[in-house]
Length: 76
Image 1 (cartoon, one colour):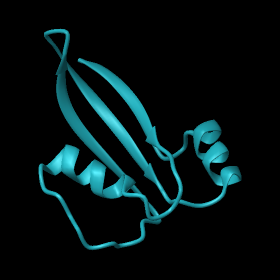
Image 2: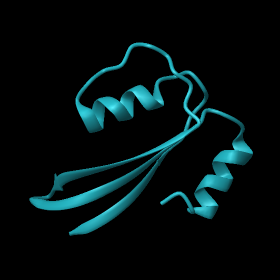
Image 3: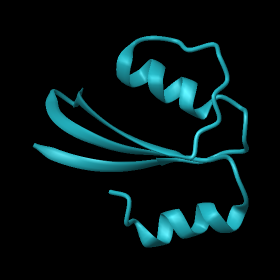
C-alpha cells in the first residue's frame, strides 16, 4: 500500500483542525479548540488503489514554524 504524507498549513482559527477531523472521523466539530499539533492516519482509495494518508495538522502560528515543520518532517 502506498503511503503519502500531508501537512495542513494556514493561519490560526480558520478551521484546519475542524476540516481534518471532518475528513478523518466524519464528524464536524463547531467548538474552537486551538491546536498545538495533531497527526492523523486515514486509508483512502485513489485511482482504484488503497493508500494511507499520514496527515500533520499544524498550529496556526508564524511562517517560520510552518517552514520548519515542512523541512524537518520529524513529526511523521
